[in-house]
Amino acid sequence: MRKSIAIDIDYTVADTLSRYIDWYHRDFGILISKDKVRGGKLYDIVDKEHRGDVKNFPDHPDFFADLPVFPGAIKTIKQLAEDYDIFFATAAMEHPNSFSAKYDWLKTHFPFVSNMNYIFCGFKGILNCDYLIDDTPRHLDAFKGKGLLFEAQHNVNCEGYERVSSWQEVPAKLGR
Amino acid sequence: MRKSIAIDIDYTVADTLSRYIDWYHRDFGILISKDKVRGGKLYDIVDKEHRGDVKNFPDHPDFFADLPVFPGAIKTIKQLAEDYDIFFATAAMEHPNSFSAKYDWLKTHFPFVSNMNYIFCGFKGILNCDYLIDDTPRHLDAFKGKGLLFEAQHNVNCEGYERVSSWQEVPAKLGR
Image (cartoon, rainbow over all chains, first blue to last red; front, side, top):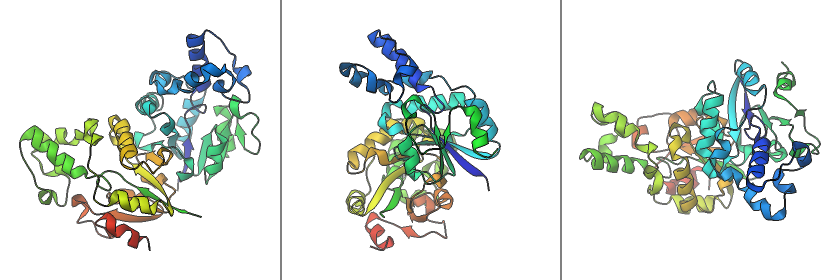
């Protein structure tokens, strides 16, 4: 029987941090480097009075519209799809305005994964898949299968997880 | 540990057939009784040239906006939520325009279930829950836990499933 892999979107296949940085620069005129965000998320390090606005960036559908894909993600996932059932599982419930934009984004970049395999949820403990690749430790904690932490600036200090820092590393971690 | 129940929306907590019948009457001037639909869905029995339009009804967000809730659903699910983790799992991927409307509908009628427990998916085999209450046999077939078929006109001839025909019957089927 084919095994299944659930894959998160933000910070895992999509370079969400770059979008936060761009929009913060656009709206507040301050350019922050990715290194500065190390250990947290952008809204953790900006001025307190900007925090609410930054947290709400993903409520705007344009946030997801042309979000860049991480290098190697499409090629690797296409290869994995030959042997595994691929699902995209995104915690979309925090930003319900983003549903359609996320759906369109997946359709555009991963046309080889059926939309029947998209999962918009809040709690990833409900996923019955063999693997979960995700940047968020709490989702891996809740998940019942084997988790791989996709490295992101905000999780560099989280210990106790098997990590991948690029899509090129993923197949080997799955024993391929 | 608390057990979990995944609950479908259309034809299970929401009276979707009534909406199809109302809109068919509104758009084509033909009133069809629920009994006439027995054994299929509305688009199976309407004139061939109307079929496409009827199938696309759920693409309009208003389809879900004020969809009626089945009698007893709110009361029963509220009671079950005291002892079980309740999830709403809906095959929303067939009608991506419906995401926001479905989200709002759940928020309105089931405010006691966290939006973190909503799941918009295509394939219910990915659900890691103990029970699934659903009107669609193929979703129960794919599900790994115990399924309960919620009776609907379109599934009356489907054999081999444990059935409930109203929300009042559900607690006893769960051994309560």
